[in-house]
Length: 98
Image (cartoon, rainbow, N blue to C red):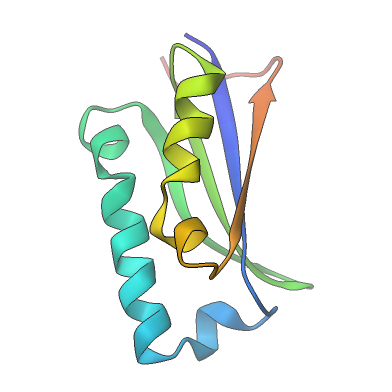
């Protein structure tokens, strides 16, 4: 099964630490939106990352088709609310848990 990487870009580098109540609610809906992938085991890892440039979101998931992942990402509350953007990439090679 192909493996995809999603990257959530937020509106500011310190977003994960400075979210407003409204932004926190949107992020809760964002997590719930990806719940089906988490619940059925296709999401390998999902969550916020903090590095030297700030914070961003990472998801690594397995799906049959890239179009499925892109369509799901386009309906993410983060995207539809204008709070952030999501990029989808295909992992060409690598090692994923058995």
